[in-house]
Amino acid sequence: MLYLLLIFFPVTMALSTFVLRRRTSLVIFAALGTVLAQMLLATQIPLDDPTRFLGVTLTLNALNRVFMLLFLATGGFALVAAWHLPHGENFVPIALFTIAQVCAVLLLQNPFITTLLLAATGLTAVLAIVDLPAGASTLVGTRAIAAALKYLVLMVVACVLMYIAFVLTDIYRPGELPGRISPSRFILALLGVSFALRLALIPFHTWLTDLVDDAEPLVAALIITLLNTTSLLVLIFTFQSFPSLLLESEGAIGVMRVGALFSTVIGAGLALGAATLRRTLAYLILYNCGMVFYGLASVTTLGLAGAIFGALNQIIAVTLIFVSLALLERPDGRTPGVLRRDLLRRWPVASAGLLAGGLALLGLPPLNGAISHLLLYQAAAERGWAELGLLVLGTGLAGLGLARAVGERLLGPAEETVAAEPLLIGETELDRPTQRRLEPEPRSTAALTGILLLLCLAIGLYPQPLLGTIAEALRGLAFIRAL
Image 1 (cartoon, rainbow, N blue to C red):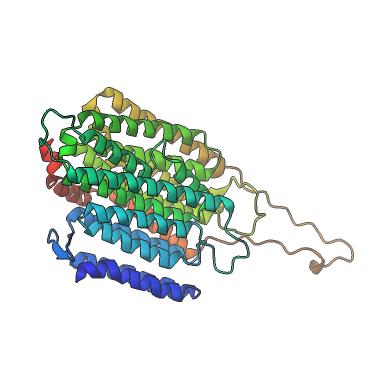
Image 2 (cartoon, rainbow, N blue to C red):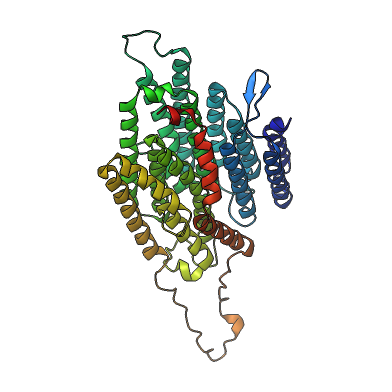
């Protein structure tokens, strides 16, 4: 019963909030209650206690529970931020429906149903991208529609490749036809391309840059944190279910590792030459995705621990970045359309959050990304100095890209204020135009940014509980023991 509640309760609340979507405060309050109830349900489910429902196995392990709780917390942060930050009229019901789909993916143990659910999450994300705020006087922009269509098409292609790979895996029996060429490399290639599309690895990255450019920051945060990380967990589940793919495909694993290194270095290099702040952040996320995928493709205990820990850190860092970005782009009374370079002086909390999130993606101590990067560097050193050097090169380029963006947008000179001139003869105060008053940062959203920043510091300073959970989960993976 608890498994079904985790899946269907947010679906029911999504339908309810859709009916009441114009009453923003009530809808957000109900959604926050739903998220808290989901977190309570997730803590009550016994671990590794599978159950059957309509012929489908449902279970929850320790690693999936950690990610589920973090996904729910991320959804809660996004809902709190929606009090003051721009979002679509249907953002809350879409977020709840996405959370329900993600919970189902984490609970189900059937690869075919999981593939269909991942395809459904792509359609749900498209609805969020093209959503407009309540009472908007304009239609959806062509760039947003193009980004949504690109995302939908690529996710459909990824799911088709994934489904073909699972069909081949289901009919393939290792050792059944001795002397024949094993199809395991072809199956692993299909899975590698499929998950590279979903994780936005280069050269399949354009959907993510378009998403960051044209979608609302809260929508981009929800898609990147929930859906991308869920895809990573599904790939780990696939390796666990079909370890023979790794045992018979050493060369294919090496190609995946080289592709991850390529994505890391190129993504960091593109961040160095990005023209806008949004695009710089998109390339920093691409760099970090390449680092995480490298750890997974290394298929070692250190690499997998770094990849899982890096995925956890990426969820928090990306949420912090996009909440801060939405605060920085919020109208504050200044002339619209003018590039501002004094954001740190004007929005100190949001600028600090943006900077901390970027540094967390780079793995700078004492933030939460430091331990994961250290584990990934150790895994690369076991493979040779060349791979370690490429990872360090990627980190250096990404750091230079972040420094350039910070110098141009955060640390520029303060906006000049016009000194008040004395009144002319016969002139009164009413004859002069009203002086603009710059609005301060919303307290609730600034407090949320501060909480996320403290969470990054807390995990960076005290990572032992998460590392212990990850180590325990890795000991239960069959393909690690086999390799």
